[in-house]
Every structure is written in C-alpha cells, then in structure tokens.
Image (cartoon, rainbow, N blue to C red; front, side):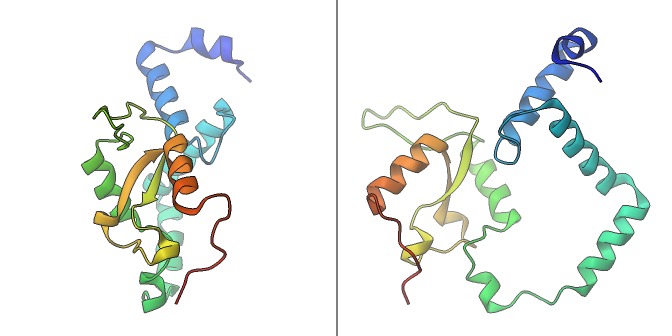
Length: 156
C-alpha cells in the first residue's frame, strides 16, 4: 500500500489538486481525510455510475420506494436538487458577510444552513431558505439563534 510520500511522488500536480478537493468535499464523512477513504468513496461513486450490475440493483431498489409523502416534504433533510441549486447560487463559498461588508472566503468545511431554522418552521425544500456557511459561521449562528440550549423538537 502506498504511503502519503509515495503517493505524492507518484502523482502529478493535477491529480493532487483533485485529491485535495475530494478531501474538502468529503470532510463531513471522512474527517481524517485518509487517502484510502477518499479513493474508496471515489471508486464506489464510479462503480455506481458505470457498472451495469450496480445500476440495475439501484434501479430495483428505487422502484420499491413509495412516492414522497407530505411528511417527506416537511422533513429537515435538504433534497439534493436544493443543495445543487444553493451551491451554484452561493458559488461554493460561505455566504457569511461581516458588518464591514467583507464576505467569508472559506470554501471548505461548508454546511447547508436553514436561514429560518427548521426548528422554528423553516422549510428544507425551498432554496431561498437554505444557504452555505462554513462550520464556524454555522455554529456561531446556532449560538446566536438558540443560545446554549438547542430546541428539542419542532413547534407545532
């Protein structure tokens, strides 16, 4: 198995940039950023897209799923189409703007944030209610909105 030093020597600069970008994109799932985890994730993605057997299995599983219910549309979970739209709109960058008008330059450790918190009735299926914030600004906003105690459940 290649160590990090051997990997760096074996790779060109473009591949290393892709690897670093993959680490940044997958930091929630793989916070240690181990090369093995990143490559395993990439191979699973590739096989899901290109391997006919995997695609057929996936299609069979999707056909078994019931259509989304009203409860699904009122979920805290942000649908992928909303995430895609928000990412494009926000330019893949934290949207926090300081009082002086300077926008946060962070492009890593990004999280999708409900502008009107879900706990207070904000919707997850509306791109106008979702934005990108870096982890630090998202946590800061949570403390501002809810103080030290987070709501236990969504109000009626």
